[in-house]
Length: 468
Image 1 (spheres, rainbow, N blue to C red):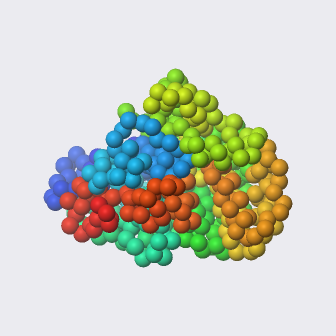
Image 2 (image 1 turned 60 degrees about the vertical axis):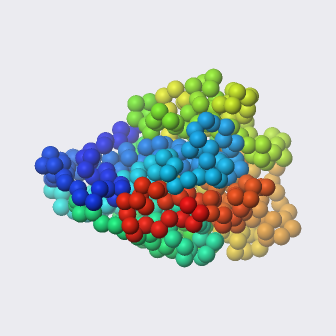
Image 3 (image 1 turned 120 degrees about the vertical axis):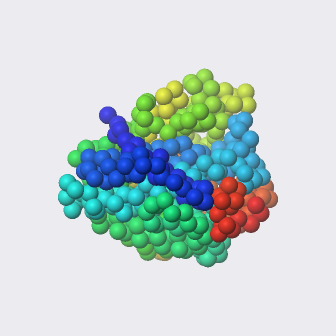
């Protein structure tokens, strides 16, 4: 049974804060709806679940940001027909790209809903103090996740200018109808807020819930630490990344799966996974996980097959069980290509959306250890545990510290393929997103997304990204 996310907050609370009109009049019905939601324990709980429901959307965890992360990098060859997505593939994106505008709006919808819960839940009658604290923790986790994804998409990575570059506006206050025009904060400021939200959430959240689905599908203490470990890894704060990864694993809720049958199963391999079902998912007319990643014969669009580069990475060592998670089929360009089977349901789009996995936490830990200590024994053990699961022989000899780091990064690529990590893993390692493509070079203007033109037009405080 899946979690049924309840979309409880009124339309007046779902506005993207930077795409509003200069004057906003809330109708009496909208005012009453908001007031009613936070006057009842049951409807307030629905407001919390409403944050997760918004996160199901195509533009948040419904596959679009993750798809972009795979094919702007070198894991996927995008062969689909959407011109707005082809622009991203070719690094020729324009600021009027409607897909990018949708990404911005939906992420700020999640933030708006989270801000509402944080501001209002303390006044709800019938909730215990423990429940109020937990719900605020859940909202802060989801706000942190939203800002993390926004910063990854719309800002150059930390490695370009040590985080002094502009990212996105931090909007942390409850929206009550007064329109403001926030300017963009720096990447360091956004990352600091993400860290604050995650640290506060880790105190407020439980390690687990009464049901396994809630433990995997709602924010937990371990999920907060796991996301913090990713943040610290991206910022090259290696000791902090180690501490956060160990804290996540120490909750006792997670373990590496024995094989690769865990997808969509809500097992100990799942740290945080957006829950979907056949009737409750993020699919729209333009996509979904399986819609993009599966071939036409099984109901997919056939837009996102393996790249030649990823195939070569798997085939470099015969027998890699991760490479077995594939099938051949007709792609959107009419050719027979290789596709991932991680998301099999192209008919109903019921596959869960992976956000944080135990495997990633171990990879974060291994990389952070290897960056600090030459030929870290623990990092080598983690690497070989993953290789063993994949049916590969252990690697015991490394000529240099960097050779161990490179081996971990390669396993990261093969373990997390098609889950949205590849673009940022290349950029944070100062690599070119696509070899031989000048526009894809590290630090290139088109390697990040433009601030949507409609947001710039409506908010005089917003500064466009260079090149747009």
